[in-house]
Image (cartoon, rainbow, N blue to C red; front, side, top):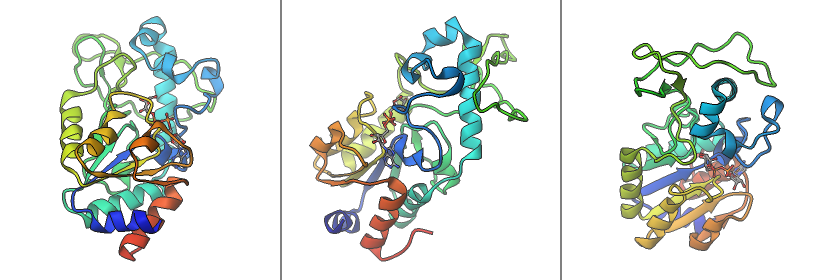
Length: 253
Ligand code: APR
């Protein structure tokens, strides 16, 4: 922790790069966690595809309704709060996330870059016209349900979740901004990602290639160990507040 705290205390231009693990302690399942209920016989990688949506739009839309309800019930944890504290302390700090939840924003992060879209930005699958986020269902069954997607107000096409599915390109502006931040930072902190999904997993490697220090927070080993100067093995909601405290003596509140 001492080495990591020194890296944070010295940093001037920081990128915090997060994955599903930062929201795990808020009760939001990660992607490598087995699916439950209606989707227990599917894996996320098969459901999160344009093909799955074409084949069974109600199954896929239902899955995202269930995920959106799970996120709405969730609260940001001490890990999200610590990320916002780092941002508040270091002007110009950039948060880049693969997560489609809004827990960074609810913890006070200003404008995290969402590389994989958002659960709260549905659009038409035919004409891309933005669609309103449906009101939360009175009771979202824990085991999930099939829900036919709403229709587009402009072309009546089926509305799809505003997330990046496997096989789809990342939003250009978000990816460019993330690469720009990683190539000009002096410290990148990667938190709760398996580093398996590209091109997002390239971001910590860009930072290392351009000479920045890389600090990883993850209870498990990942391929990002190879580019990390320091690995803090532990859950984000415990490690990040301790890191902020060790670096600046302040408790992220
Ligand atoms: N604190 C920190 N890390 C954690 C915690 C925790 N409490 N719990 C789990 N982790 C780690 C796991 O060890 C794992 O390495 O978080 C990582 C989660 O990995 P994934 O589920 O693969 O999530 P992520 O890396 O964000 O996935 C990338 O894949 O499925 C797609 O688009 C989806 O954005 C997602 C992308």
